[in-house]
Each structure stands twice: as C-alpha cells, then as structure tokens.
Image 1 (cartoon, rainbow, N blue to C red):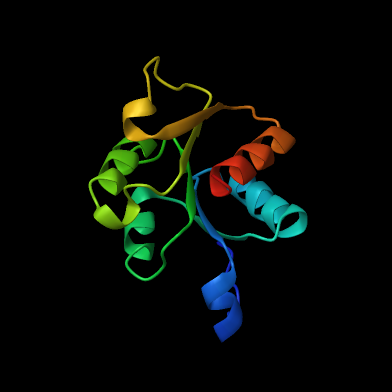
Image 2 (tube, rainbow, N blue to C red):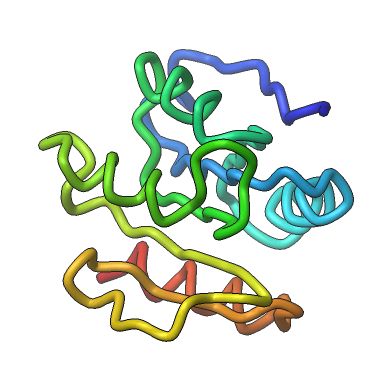
Length: 133
C-alpha cells in the first residue's frame, strides 16, 4: 500500500504538524492523505497496519493519530492502548474510526470516535479542534 512520503527541510521538520493515519483500506487512506494535503497545512503519513505505525513512531512523533478500528492482526483499539502506555504518546490526540465501533466509552483512553462513513468537513473540524486544544 502506498503511503505519503514528503521531502522535509530543516524548517518543516520542526514546525509542521504531523498526522499518522493507520488505515488498511487503501481507497480511504489515499482519500484522507489527499484531503489533508489539499485542505490543511498538516502533513499526513499513511500506514496500513498497527505494526507499521509502531515502527514509524520510533522515528516520527505525530501530533495526532487517526486509526481505523478494524485493522489486520492488531486492531485500532489495541493500538490505542499500546500508544497510551507510552509516556511520549499518552496525551497525543487519537481519532478512532469505524463502521462497527464497539458500544463502549472511550473517554478513559482519551479517544475521539467517528463513525464511517464520515463527513470530511466534520473530520477536518474535529482534527482542528483536537490540535488546537
């Protein structure tokens, strides 16, 4: 699955907000990366699995995560729990998306949930709100 690769300058490396999108459906993932590149000043990085996300965060510190709930092997909720156990990511905003979210309260994990299909403007507004709080 392709993911967004950006050339970084020393200036953008330190100032640009980075969003990691963990989505195994390539059409949704590419739609989101395109939307972020065209509609926002944020840099987005798309990875198809939770395992790839865990590898990525060894070198990149995202400002926000967007996780699909239904991922292969490790689901989005398990990834969220893994991230929250790491001090570096304890307070990084997380959006969990799915058409089939379990009926539970995500406040303990400090997670915002969004149902699929989602409204792009609502998602972008939610991202802005989370990043500006």
